[in-house]
Amino acid sequence: MALRREPHVLVVGGSDPSGGAGIARDIETISSIGARTCIAVTALTVQTHEAVMEIHHLQPRLVADQMCAALQANEVAAVKIGMLATAEIIVAVAAVLRESPQVPAILDPVLASTSGRALLEADAIAIMKRDLMPLCRLVTPNLIELALLVGAEHAVDEDGAVRQGRKLLAAAETHALLIKGGHASGPRSTDILLRSDQEPIRFDTPRLAISMRGTGCMLASAIAAHLANASPLEDSVRKGKGFVFEKLKKNAAT
Image (tube, rainbow, N blue to C red; front, top):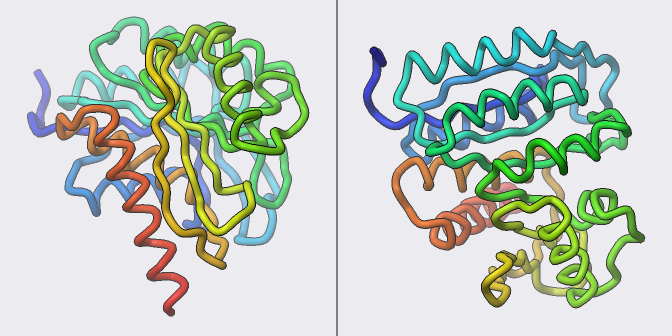
């Protein structure tokens, strides 16, 4: 029997001792939206705001056991997935998700750190597309991650990003993609929600002249928190985008 019946978001990802990204940022975001959090750690890192020095992967069985314990102990209403590190961990996470198909999963496909350190083994990308993405309600790649996932050059405009997104939707058989526009240029930051049976939906905010670690973690976690609180996907994305924008604006003002 679950000990706490209120909705929880299960966060699956890596630790960041600096607090700038990873599980620390996820918990902070989800809590500020009013949801509860439980966790399954995939990797321990040693990093600062400038660089990642060490990465230690956990055993896949231990990751799966953490997820199962969290699902047993709590009323998990959404899953947010971040750093997965290895193909073996991806397979283990996917196996647990298959046992709880009613719980929406949001995947932030973390491939590298802001400083450029690889956070997912190169041979694991195909496994992520084959085994994990079809199980996820939403996948949230930025433009760099999108290009790597489809094996193409970085899209130079919005039309190119949409074409790459549709290619990934078909190849990975996932339900929906949110293409993040933070790495684009121009005065507006536009994220694009793609679903195979619908027209693209754009979420647009002014582009702020500030960079901040962990914004991808924040966005996926915010969307998961709103899904856990029973908001529809489009509303959850809109609210999540607004949450990140307000955080960036507050940071720019300090």
